[in-house]
Image (cartoon, rainbow, N blue to C red; front, side, top):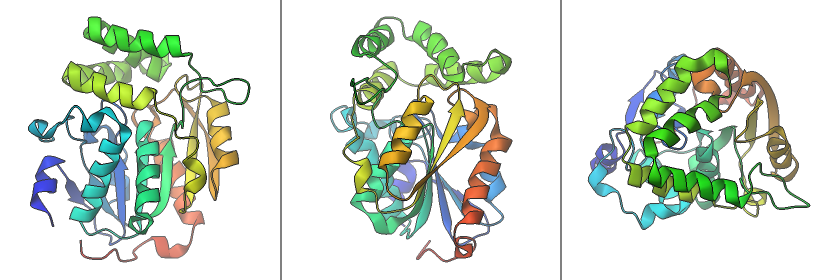
Length: 280
């Protein structure tokens, strides 16, 4: 194991199984967002949690604003984690932008991954009429970044409510707000620009590994039409429509998230459970 990467990305490993399942947090969040989901997989899998550089308990001194101004910087974090643990054919579970980060990592090094599970994914947040609706006009995203730069606390409050889109989950929205506020505003803004202004539509056709799209109800960030676009254009993909409302079902509705993932894995080859992944 590469101890530098273990420390830099705050990698934590648990579970009794041999096959690895990696949980990757979405924008502005650390690995603790999986606390109500990941333990459900420890009996059958080797559970791997990590933080992107600049977030959570990662090595903040390793943050390079140039490297992490593009998704490729975060993709490299994932590849470094896989290399440090000598993973082979791991299941990658990514929330939001981590779905695309995992997708890009799998294109670069497909041997590291057996399946991608994407929660609320979007290959492009910008509308590109007439053929594509991502949910946002460029002006919307420019204003979002502008608010982050001028009133970060106000942005954190507003954006967390938008993500959840569910007044019955106010405590989860507050949890998200606190997470955003615990991140250095410069780092968060750098990540936001990399996240919201990227366009990975040309990349989704290159995916070699099977994938599951978990599509939430009333998700403002990644609406149904985006999930359906991915299903139509991404090879060997399936889509599951969840009852969970908003963009963060692993926080607001962990039981449904767990069951949706397990249903998919159960319907794949039975060797998914308990198979070896070299060297970990």
